[in-house]
Image (tube, rainbow, N blue to C red):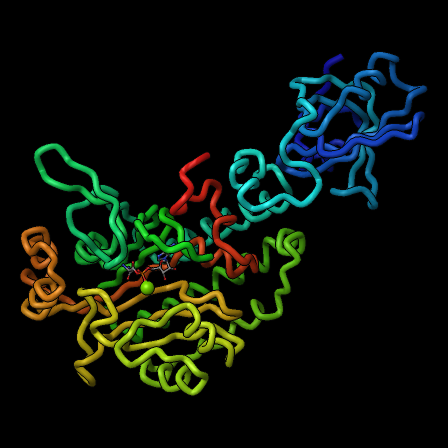
Length: 433
Ligand code: 4AD
Ligand code: MG
């Protein structure tokens, strides 16, 4: 017999009728007379019930062959059942195995080490926790586009192969025909600035690459960054936008992904407080604060992960640390007129010790000062002619920032390490699967 097919999530429309559902076995059990198959299809999970006396003998036998991750098509009557996961149960009439799954399926319902799980990432993704993280990631990506679309920003895509180095982090390089070295983009920002002069307000959303030899819980070698760039925004306008953006992202996940957060056992108390104004702290005050707590970081240094944790420990909301010393930050940041030792920039630190999720700044718009900074950093000036042109032909006040998607997901999901928030993480010692 053939029946109409349905995804698990759509079963509510088929109560009382017989449908076919296709998916994978997550659990089987039997009392000898009644058997249960729990299956998932990506849209939900469904408990299917077989009564021995009511199905053909071969169907009952086939049930006996089911193992974890067998793919199958099950037909049965859809029954509403408030106690069942997903609210429905299937009274089975037919069961067809599509693909068997040998009993050595690597991921079993027991504790596995993280390296083992990452080696089997292609299968680990099938587990409910991992799927919940991927759904939250998807919600955030969509929220990014909705936020900027509603504000009339133009989404622009910037090159991944570049000649101009954007940040101080490690570079992946490859020979590029007769043109010398090409680098995998560490940022789309410099191109974003050119686009902001053309379109006013833009954002980029793309993969970025950093050959960071740091094995920390917040570094990937390939990560996704959202980089808005706004003409006529100063540093204050920039921070206001960052605050609204982060509030919107957190709000969207709280509103639409409550079930997933629950599955991850995320305590959302702190996330709910993100609606208020964020804390604003000058870099110099941040140094005083952490020194009083025992940190040996000196004025002039960039802040380390431990310093950031010390700073946010006092607050229940995200914290902006503003106006870092020039030597701690990238060449393109605008000198602070009120204190030329510093630049007009901000790092946004997430609460609960998650650390920097955004780096932003007003951009240096003075041709000579920018040229001097490029030279001081020992960057190849000839690669920055086009970037300097933006200051030559109608220079303009402008600002922007970069939000690291994975760090933001890690914080919102309450995960210890960001390697779980991207489907196939790229880490210093991991290129497979
Ligand atoms: O602070 P960063 O280096 O800033 C920039 O790249 C600027 N060009 C952004 C801009 O103004 N348009 O990086 C921005 C964010 C960090 O705050 C962090 O969230 C994330 O990118 N990030 C990383 N995420 C994962 N792994 C890494 N190795 C990361 N490096 C930075
Ligand atoms: Mg930074």
